[in-house]
Amino acid sequence: MASTMKELHQQLRSDLEFLAERMAKYANKRRIEGPILEKGDPVYLLRKNIKTKRPSAKLDYTKLGPFRIKDKLGDVTYRLELPKDMRIHNVFHKALLEPAPKNAKLVKTLPLDEELASEEYDVEKILKRRVMRGTPQYLIKWLGYDDCENSWEPEANLSEELLRELRQDHPEWFRPALPPSRLARRPGLRTRQS
Image 1 (cartoon, rainbow, N blue to C red):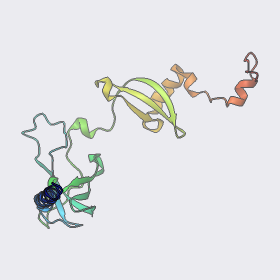
Image 2: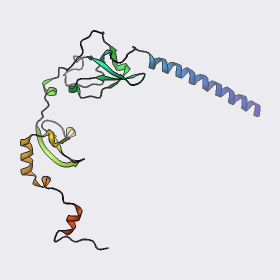
Image 3: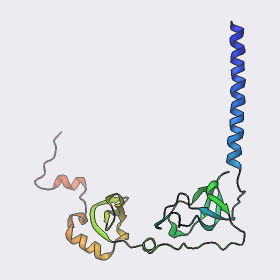
Image 4: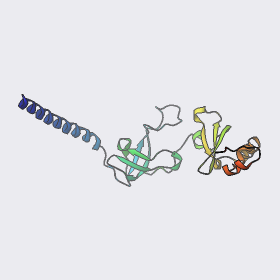
């Protein structure tokens, strides 16, 4: 009985090793296949996961670029030199890249829709103020956008006119905060006795 169990365990172990090798062989084959890309090569970026404001996905660009490969981060990941106006993460999987001709003219800016190209948006309302790492930020409700699009913006992004209106409407937001030691000495405030 014991020898039969040992034989069974050995057979199962060898079967599992064989299956693991076969799975690794096919998985690695799929991962490593594809174009060989190096640092400095021009590539097209497939628009698969990039959303645009174009009216129809069928009529939108299928590829963006070409862009130059800035770094090869691993076997299948690359960092691209993207125009600053794209505002997306610049690391992509090999499956989203397609080699471009070596003499292809690189893209410096992308033609964007008027709405996307404009960097100024209309503020409907300012909801809150906070200070993060010493920088005042404001929770903005954007005109024509849903509440899920509200965003915290640093004071530097707001116009002088808007800041002037804020100081008039919410002077309490601009008063310096008193340190706790000064709060305890203010007349009329009680302190806890231990």
